[in-house]
Image 1: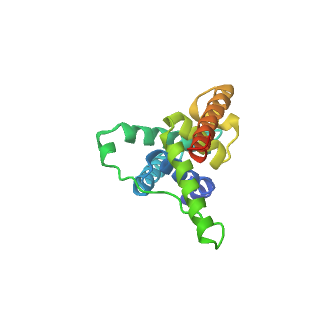
Image 2 (image 1 turned 120 degrees about the horizontal axis):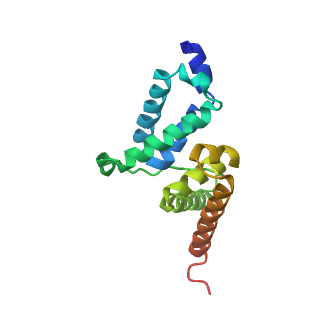
Image 3 (image 1 turned 90 degrees about the horizontal axis):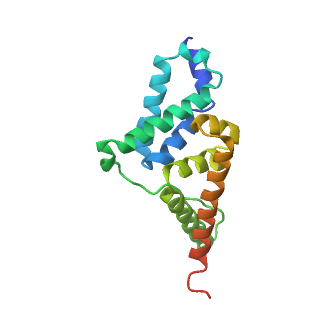
Length: 169
């Protein structure tokens, strides 16, 4: 496999790898490093990629495993945490602040979920993978993925409702 073939193979999903790494590691710099490391490993093993049925699923699994290993390492304590979203939906300042606050709160809730739930929400709701693909990437049964996603969404929903109803009987 030459360089052009390799680039054509990974281009459709390389941004997804970064977003998954960012969701797990939070830090933009750490996510970039993780993505580069995974892409380097894919490049080194480029001849073996022809044998894989779904290279994207393989790359996502590599990214997930690399990030989880990184989080478990001693260096994980040095990862800088930075805020991650700034959405704008209208010119109205109050609406922008409300939207930004809600978005930040949703991200905070998602980031507080267990690693597996965070990853499943990222893959399904943000990256739009099918349940079958997620099950393959995470080495889980499809029904287990559905249940975990349902529970994660329920947790996010309950915490959002609790925040918005705070102080109201």
